[in-house]
Image 1: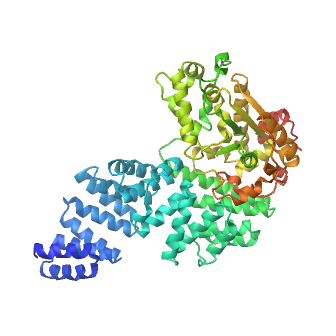
Image 2: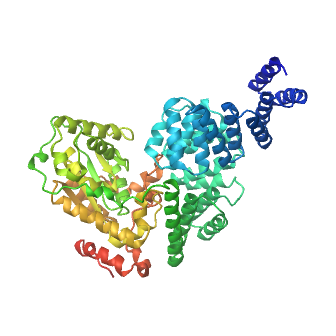
Length: 603
């Protein structure tokens, strides 16, 4: 074997002539069977031709011959990844890591192996290291982005993908990027990239299915159906989910349920099982099959809880709404009512309510007004709060003192952080409506930062709220565990509303309260009173906001996205009565004080 032959093989590989490199290295190995370097080059040539199993076998043999050469183990690990052997890849990269430490190639490979093994927290840890070392490397950035997606850190995911150039990526990377953009809510870029991919490779079924899911999420049902019609039926979870969602929204409930059944019999990832079960429950609910819907929901929530534990295996389940321990113990001082000097822009209006109270419907009506702009469920306030909690001397257990000791400069800076976050999503030209239902559990912070803020609190029959929350797939995170059963959801409702009630007695707040039932039955009167509270006149277009919602190109960032494109109606009022048999005595006992307080009946 000569150096010239090895160099020739490398040059052939770089020129994309893998077959010629294979022929050359086989000649070398015929003469020198023990040549480990030639063996690796032959394996690379095979890998470039898609002969992954043969390549892996050669890399494994080379690794045994050169156990102290890290590149050999890295090549073996990458070959295992190509073959779908994530456990083998993990072993190979672990060996390489023992030789060279935290090399980026090793971190990347091990992170990908751990993603495949569903060790998402471990994968994120090593991929974050790799990304910190080489943020401009596309393969590193995409792998790190995938770890963020799996942990449902969607705002971080959007930042990670903000400046990536799709044109610099190969086609497999573009497929991954399109899906990551879709998960991050960057619908415009995702749609454009999917169209580009399908123009190049029209037989790409995976991209078609994912595009259909995105189109359904954007309420473009006919387009989604058209895309799916070009995909052959299979038992995969993604295809079943996309097909069932589209068919259900077309009113074809039996066909939708038929699409789900084959996938539900497959050993799919827990997160996908949960999504399919939630969709099955929606189909049964739409068909009036309450018992079947509740059975599907129990399975859905069980899979969600397991998916959470799979992602966080060494983590104790978080305390439900644990942040509610941050509360004022005494009435806020009058000084909190003083506006911040040179306060610009005008303080927001916070649209809140227990989840599934109808805040999305009201948000759409408000967004139709030319003098209002809506921030749709983005954690801008949470970012400002995290800044405050990082101040020296801050104590969550003494919120009174911690908020009282904030300087004017710190308050101004926190406000600036908030508005910077807002402008990531919307550039208000009028008054901002910040719609984030559980901001109601941040009342003391708002009182301190935004003394001229106004609140819109939307109430709905507590039993309808509880049922609707239980029926939603809010994500595989700790907060979603609060809705795992009707009783757990009722207890969560009682905890949140009791917190709000107590804190309203201690923190200044200008609040306009309205009820969902009144809003859908007498929308004009309710909206006129609300707009008067905001010192604005009602506009007729607000009563036809479903037209604007249906024509909207950006997604509606809430589980209600399918409902708000319909004309205002009272179809969801008293929906819980169909499920009355599932509301146990304990569930109703938790809700009774709030039913009485808000003037709702049990029967």
